[in-house]
Length: 580
Image (cartoon, rainbow, N blue to C red; front, side, top):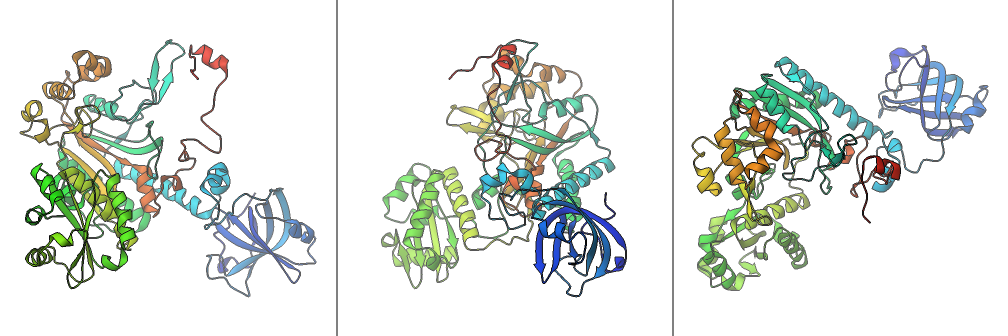
């Protein structure tokens, strides 16, 4: 139906007869001439219809988003538009056909739309006509192509794993699928292909990858969806560095292919302890400074009871220095930051401003000698703001890490054109759950302890570290992985520390435990969040911008209204009753 798309005609095409199709992006009637911006996903071409044209009345009747077909001759424009690639030419229309009429759209179909999020989700098929949204999906497509080409060249095999599997609730809630054939039993949609990809290593596949759909029934946020896509990778006979090197090569290729950016490898490697202590986050954004400082020794000198009590109970006093923050943050603004710190479990927020002297909430407890000591220790200059949290180490780190990120964005300290990749390595193998009053796996139950830490697992789980690693980009966790346990005895220890009985292990993981008996090779891998990677490549801050048909924050598809009740006959067939 067309000879060309709306993004390809140039001055070299002048005098050619062409047929174009697309949507009316804009129509202008200027002194009898009708100008039409015809849009498809490739771009915009201007059409012009003269008053003596037999299709003039059709042109006049056009409205935005009419789908049309136009035939005509390419001519050079007298008034060129340098803002679009086709701006040197226009098409003098000789034939014009309306393929489909359109009602007035409920949102502006252009890059900058004034539509509310709810409207965009309700009319997603119109939102996706916007060039910016189409470009996001094209970048996602090209990213997938780059990923597949890269792994194919390295002898990886793409293997699809089941969507209907066994429920093994550890961490997020499973989505359950009732079985009609097996009454009262359920499949679970995969939270990840973790066990399947390990079984592929047992099967001798050696190098596996998959662009896999995953599902987790958890609350949504800007960088979390109920269903998401991950680049899943597993390799046999490897250590941490092998997996990390392959991953760095992948990201280097993606950055070059998609953004034409050369990133340096190897990436920075930072231990989990250093990340938490210096940045207050296990996914640190290193595009700006403002690292956390431990001032516990200085705080011990003060006659300030809050500090004394925290330190006596094994806590710490830590701070961040906000350069030029004294004038930026008023007392009211600091109160707002205090609420943020409390959201991350800090009990409060002390503060000091430095001009010629220190002022602030604890200034009266600081004598001249102590003031000089702090100024020297922190390298304070006039105009600096010091924000202080005294608490347990983890709570102090988390609260200051959240303040650090918030303040950096508020003060425009973050370079949006910078891409800082880094590895966070040497993670704790376990973490303590206050809610469950037991140790849980920091990554998952199949993560290998570091060499020499196998004997610590039972008696000192809090001191046991893992062969685990996360890949981080600009403050976002792109993905994570580990070297897996391939030894039956160590896997049994892991289950015991997690409080799983032999019966529970058999019920949840019997097929996997059995597989470990048959010559399991050392293996490891990782998974990268594809949605999150594309979100960062397109400089967005919400996954919904790079997923064709996402769920809204309410966990509903506002376009189709899913989820919805189903007919009672369907429930009866599955032997299911709902409780109101």
